[in-house]
Image (cartoon, rainbow, N blue to C red; front, side, top):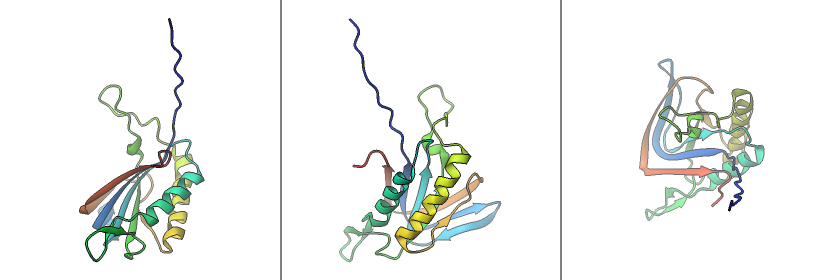
Length: 162
């Protein structure tokens, strides 16, 4: 007897958010961007991501209450504390290690899809924050430095809206 199982493939935009007391990006030994208190966001883009994923994520990030209030409770958002955002495109967030020891990045969006979505993410995030977003450089070899505050690290998938 055979059983049929329906498998639904879920595609999503994936981010890692780190609350930082400082963070910076070096490219070719020069500082590209640097922030003090705020968020370092690593952004993974998949082939099927869309603007609705960006809208939802940017709104979520801007309102995420992960900064301490006056009594030490994580009750304030990055916008409420006047923090900065440093955004880094990182295709390795979609690494598949299921088979063998060499990660596969087949799920990561190709540059012709990822670059416009990355640029759209920057624009929407700037709108949500009502301020400039600091960035790395898409496709560059970057050296990212940070001091994780807390530590607080959160992973969000756009299709898993818990």
